[in-house]
Image (cartoon, rainbow, N blue to C red; front, side, top):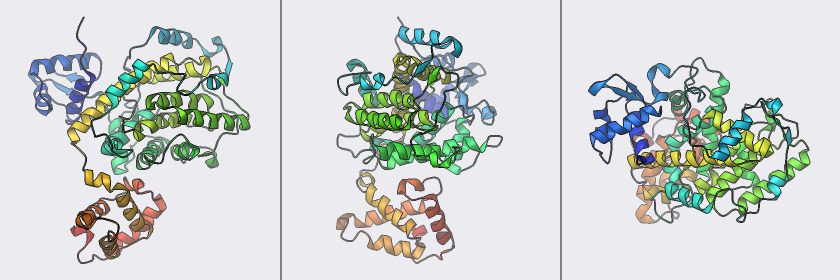
Length: 476
């Protein structure tokens, strides 16, 4: 039996390919890898990746070049570039999962109608009932626990990989909703605020909403949890400007909804929806294992359909809450096939069977963990000083923005702020760090300071026209 190639090593090769937008030869990839592997071994792994449609090979011999499928230049503007239903990744499916797929591939009218089964929730007992076996949870812990030290504050790991996480999770979660933005278009939208030509504004709004929601989770890692504050605000951010009724953002459903191409009929009584919603949150909060928590909300939140729309998006980001809080690798749904995900959710809705979704969850988490292990290796270790003072830096920058301070006032405020709050030996470095954060502000990263877009724009108008002080923050 052939020895399995470790996923982390395959992802490291993909990351090396990604650093060459025009394509990379095997020799270029070999030079980019750290640690190095023999060139012959690399060629074997490139062949494996090409066979499994994870890289695209162009040309032959020593000058052959490799691209990631979603970053080929000619595909970056294609309406189909962001879709997963063409040439989808094939994931390993259990026999129970295959049986579910066979049933669900019948037309909806041939499947048995199903309503909301409250017993599916009522019979779950936190820390007694287990969707994931002990062996599965131990494995997830082994692949998902980064080596960042034992006592790091909540959200440390997610902050360290935030730039990559924003793009990955926003793109993949949106892709699973049929969004046709490519990975490159998503990166350009998030980093530069530039929408892709030929795409509906609805798609750009969906991606930007994901960005805001992810930043909300990461910047408030020590406060989020399975409570109304977190989940209702998560929905409000993800649903912003996307609902026919704007008041529905962050509000529980009191209208009937249907599931396209499904024999499932969700709960309709508003009082029962609210009651079950609170029960789902209470049960999730009581679960001790973060992976069981994550998978539980992926099952039960969309099954309830507590909101007018955007329920699955909420569940995918809510699944990251315990992972972010516990400094585990996040789940960004990298390469998750659209059809398999849809069938897995239909299995929950119509059959209350978790097997197919569990197959997908285990596979997707291994992929995500390997990806971020490779990303973190390329980034190096985070600065412990910045992690230790992150809440204070967030506070002072937020106060400057909300106070609409000009450059001169901001310099004076930063210089005086540490007195009595920061150890004398660290005050100069804190001032330098605050000035650097202030000068690095732009429309794509201000959300982590907990300011509203209107507050940021009002401050920017003052900041742009204010005369430079002596010294200026820009000179820092």
